[in-house]
Length: 120
Image (cartoon, rainbow, N blue to C red):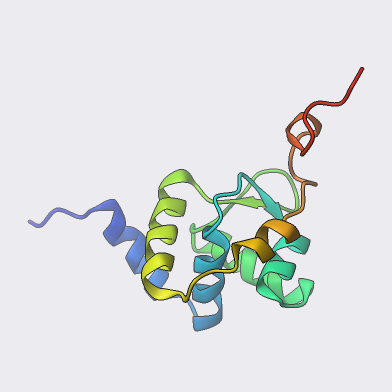
């Protein structure tokens, strides 16, 4: 019996995604961010927040994206690595500046936000 790789399992899940969800999955993986929220994903994808929330939840349902705290999403390390590799092969040069500028810090703890820990 043939051996099934982790990449093959991810590929099966990815292959079942509608085109719009697949493109979002790849685009959101390019900059390796710890967590992001709906607003940041909507800005990065240039889509309305309601539509993006549906896409993000579909990716969670497909086990290609995880959610920790409400409204915050992230890639499992292995899924993220798979998505970034696939994105480099399939997407045009990404606009990481747009993504990084749009990335919300609402999901990050106070101490991890830009400019270091709060002064006491």
